[in-house]
Length: 133
Image (cartoon, rainbow, N blue to C red; front, side):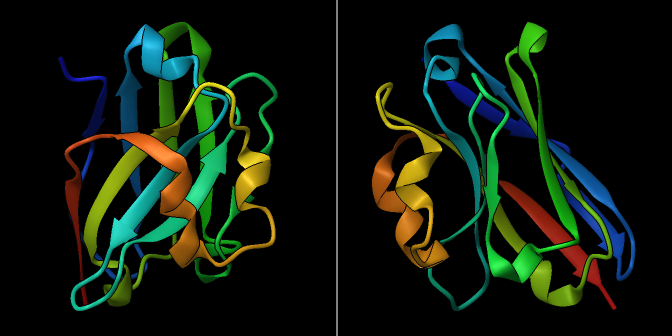
């Protein structure tokens, strides 16, 4: 049973925008923290942004500060990642993930984005984002 499903990826030119969607099952959406991660070519998986569905609190990795935004639509159990001013180095696989029900997004506060993944137990299959120069 798929609990998280990403959509909206594809190709865009540098400087462009793209919105990714993460549709969550009711169970997964009860998680205290839902996040977006990415794996860029030749690099480790890293956290991008997170949001607490219950409070709308968010956190972000420094690499996307000012360019990416995370939001949610509770009625649809969906989390979005709005990506602006995209760069070729943003190209890679993007994943949606959710923590165990009792973990809030506070667990990633102040730690490296490379270390966020350890707190997330439910993952989507991922979606490709390609930014051309």
